[in-house]
Length: 209
Image 1 (tube, rainbow, N blue to C red):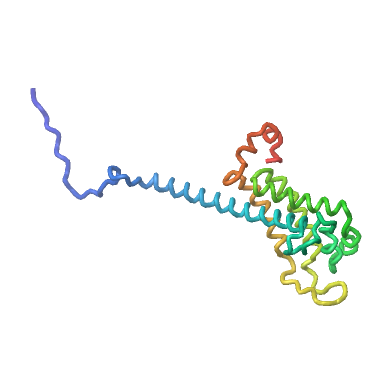
Image 2: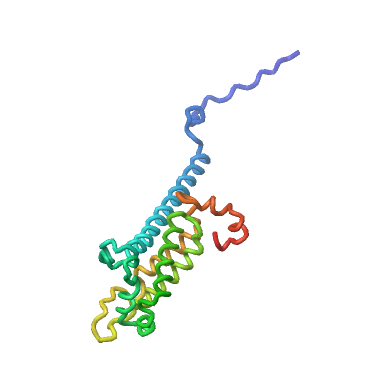
């Protein structure tokens, strides 16, 4: 019986293989790079969420207890002060100037404003109900934007408004940030978003997500 010997393979130049020394092939490297990018983006949005939440919570605490920063000591809501009277009575431009003056210090305005600060702040820090927080926070920022009315070059008394931008100010930035955080489910990282999404009520009402 004849035995046919297999032809010898050429000993030409070959690129070294890295499979044996622990280095991943190109496809695995691409997947790893994509995973790293996704993780970095998730942590970036989570950081933005926590910092923005602290802004709202700090405003609530300072206005409630008069911590001596924006609200002087002894002038807090808990001491009988009004968290909206000073700001709304000082509105000096815009189409709702007289309306804001009439609202200044009203109990219902104080409660809505303070509950809004607390609710949005807690939702952002915990990472839950971000869609609801985005809607509530955007409405708050819209009213505050109208109260400051950046498009005005002059106040109602004729003095310069000193507006630095006729459209974009920090209220608009906060509103866009809130919407973005809800859109990317930023509560799933460093938050309780995933647990929140598993609740039966949230499964039935996705708008509470």
